[in-house]
Image (cartoon, rainbow over all chains, first blue to last red; front, side, top):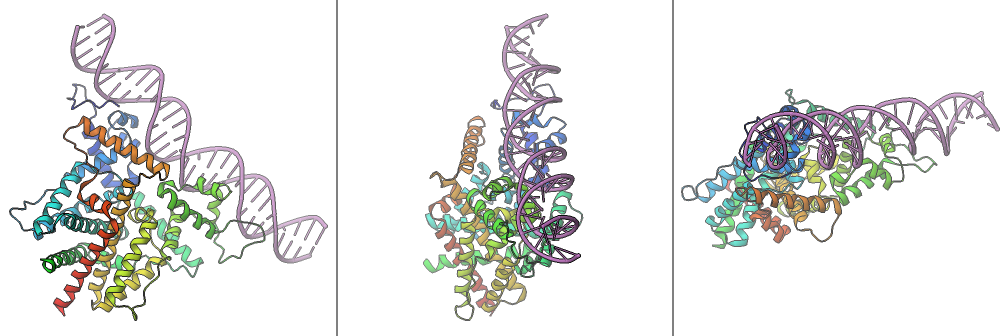
Length: 234
Length: 234
DNA sequence: CGAGCCTCTTGCACATTGTTCAAGTAATGG
DNA sequence: CCATTACTTGAACAATGTGCAAGAGGCTCG
């Protein structure tokens, strides 16, 4: 693969990297991380699967690019206009929504996909927010990290809960897999009395009831806690 | 596969489900979720890969069993002895350590693996803890969920950071993949000036510096926030 | 002790999917 | 019109999950 620096499109109707990444994001949103495969992507673009490899080094690389693309959806609040707490809330909520829109992102993160500039921009702004709040150096880092991880974890939980409750004829592969998993779990439970399989549990119930509200509850608690650390120190 | 209800071992030296699950956990710990494959598992157990399928319905099912096994490592603090805050801290910290010991768990969770009794037990105890703290019904659920998700997110971040900084000749596959990813990222960055790839960022920096400390900082902030919600209402 | 029957184990085979590669086809510049 | 550059394609390979039919060890009943 030669990466032509900012090539201009030829007259011929040809694939572009942008197009491929966009379609990949569509496919990821629709089918999840395991729903994305090169042949399906090719079909969706009316070309051979292997044509992708001229534009993209590998599938992993494609996921990386898709990830970076999605990070750029985020707008960052102006710290001169809104206070740090509002800014933190906005950023965390937007982040949460992004993860909700693109559940595969959580998987990608868990699988150690490296992030690009999109995340860097967000991180910078996040850091600035907590510095504006009054945290110094290392503590601002930690505060930003705490909130980010809280959002990430919440998104993971919400995604799992959603895929559990989303019986309303969603996609097929996931649905099937889930069905199998539950059937298996129940079968195991029947044969192994000591293994009482439960698919709900409080955490799942909390999410299922209203993931967004659960998210907000915890977020505000976390921000409360951070604020308290400030006033206690200050 | 017939699941014999609690079969006793035959005289013949034969595989057991337990053995398979244990070996799977070993392999998962050593090689990660994508390092686990039936053929490798078979080799490690000196049997054909397909022999697993008599004891285990599928690979997914095996991961489910491995997951449940690992959840049982957790001990639960006695709520009559330690206060709720200490109990919450202990449980969260143990959970965090469990995720750190078995990084693939985060991936499994993100990939919507269904959990078994091990998690249910933990959830029950967690709920009881926050009820002991004074939260009522739904709020206790939300508090438990908030802390759990915080831990999960933190574990995901820590795992990612660890695999980034763990250059000290760890396993090979992951190392290689990581190396490739970074090389790719840099290559992309060179050819597409607008895509300035950054592999660090504040969050990553925070983790890398000392993930455990970052975890504790955020955890205490979150618990502070929860406590504050109690006193404010009470 | 032999026949039949469980309980596993094995080897073969197939489908899916990531990826490589040599060969093809279109636009472009000379 | 030709050579070069920029892509596209189809065949093919390797890795991996999994089904299946055949085998092999041990138990039980006659």
